[in-house]
Length: 230
Picture 1 (cartoon, rainbow, N blue to C red):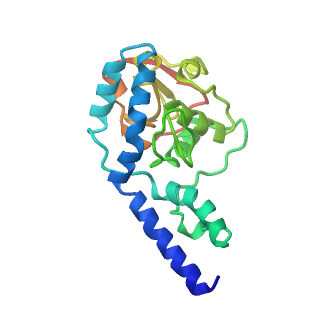
Picture 2: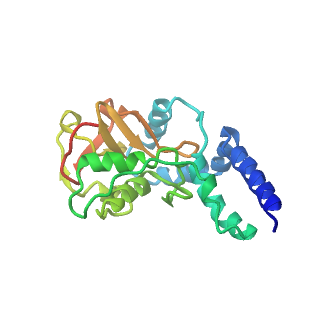
């Protein structure tokens, strides 16, 4: 393949990525997940209807942003790059935040916050654990702690039994886990009334106001020692 042909292919791929990152495209890809998520939540504990309503309201209704361009480019780049004989298209991947390395067994809440923010923009996928394709709420928290060398169980009902309990949100520190609606949802507290989570189908991992301070906060768990501010 000539250099001119290769550049033409790359431009075509860049256009494809731009199309895929549009909100309408993202919503169409995640709409099919909504019914599965609703059905699964209905089999859990707690007030699932209130959970969905509260979370949707907290996130301001329908999503206004699609999946992170870097995530899509990363997943597309490998396969398309091989097909073009270009050895991958790393140059198309949008830069993402890089958390500083943490030695095993030394992670603090501050490290948890930094690592969690690395995944902002990754789409919610029911049952997902892979940031390249999407994660659900407990898949996200499990991944963040795994990146820091801390193993957590896969599902919320088990994650909410880990670490040590925190009495109230007023005593919570950045990096603590917030479990709500009887174990139907889990997020990471950032401090100053903010949290980060993988919310519902059609949304992406994002920072938001910690609505758990208003209702249905089931428990708070501290997995690693508290660090500094958010």
